[in-house]
Image (tube, helix red, strand yellow):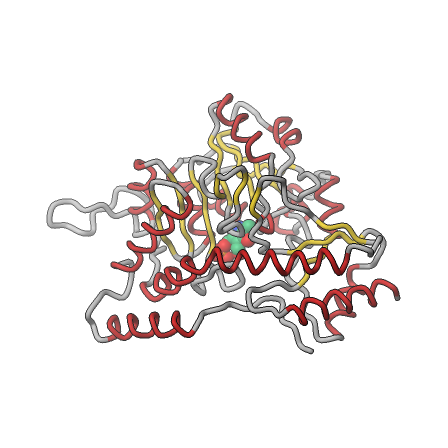
Length: 371
Ligand SMILES: Cc1ncc(COP(=O)(O)O)c(C=O)c1O
C-alpha cells in the first residue's frame, strides 16, 4: 500500500464548477486576476471566520507581511514562537520589524509565561501561530496580555482554517490573521493567502499594498501611497477557494474521524504521546502529531517510507532560533521548543484517506516502534 503524506480533494461537482467558470474567464467574459471571484471569496471567507473583512493575496507569507506592513511594525519587536515556519519570521523581517523568539508549551503553541518575559518597551506585537491547526488556550491569555499592554495580537493562522476555541474561530482573536492556501493545507488554492480583520483602516492599506501601494486618484490608476508589491490573487485560485471553503467543515469532520482511528489504534503504545486539542475547541487536524519518547525519529521516518508510507511534514524539525540563516539567535535556549521539535512526528492525514489506510499506518507504526 502506498500512502502519501497529504492529498487535495475536489469533488466532480467542484471540478465541473471550476472548469465552467474558468472557461468563461478564458473566453474573456471576466477578468483573470483580482476580480469578481476574489471579491466573492473574500466575502465568504470573512463570513465563515466571523470577521468583518478579508483581504485575499497570493500566499500566506504575503498575508502576514501585509499585516506587518499595515500595522507599521518597522523598527519594533514582534514576539513569535521559534517553532514555526520561516515565513512567520520573514514577514516580520521584511516589514522592517525585529523577530523575538519565544518558547512553546506542551501543545507546541506559544507559552504565554515565556512571552511575558520577552516583552520590552520596544515590543509592538505578539504573533501566535496555531501550529498544526491547534488553537491553544494561550491565545486567550495572550489576547488579554495584549489588551492590557496595548500590543497587537496577530495570528499566523496559515494552518488553522476552521479550527476554533470556545466558539471563536482561528483568525478572529487578534487585530488581524494570515491564512495560507498552499497545496498541502486543509483547504487549498494551490498557492494563495488571506488576511482576516475587523479593522477597515487596515483593509484599505492592505488592499493598496497588495497592488504596488496604489490608491485610486480621480482618473489615475498609478497613484502610489504606500510601498507595495504584486501580491494579487488570480481568479482561478479564488474559484478553487470558493469550492474548498464550501467543503471545509466536511473536510474537518473526516479529519477528526481519522484522528479518532489513530487515537484508538495507538492508545496502547506506551512509547508515544499525542498532542491533544484543548477542550471546547475544534481541531482541523492539519497535522496529527505524536511525540516519540524513546525512539530515533530518523529510523521511524525511514522505516515507514520503506513500507510505502510518506510521513507528513514536520512542524518543525529545526526551530527557527537554530536555523543557520538566523545565526544571531543560535545560542538562545528554548528547552520545550527544542525537545518537541526533535521528538515530534506527523502521521499522514487527508480527507480522502480510507479507514484501511489509517489502520495500515497505525499498524506499521506499531511494528516499527517494536523493532
Ligand atoms: C505557520 C505558517 N506560516 C506561514 C506560512 C506561509 O504560507 P505560504 O506557503 O502560503 O506562503 C505557512 C505555510 O506554508 C505556515 O505553515
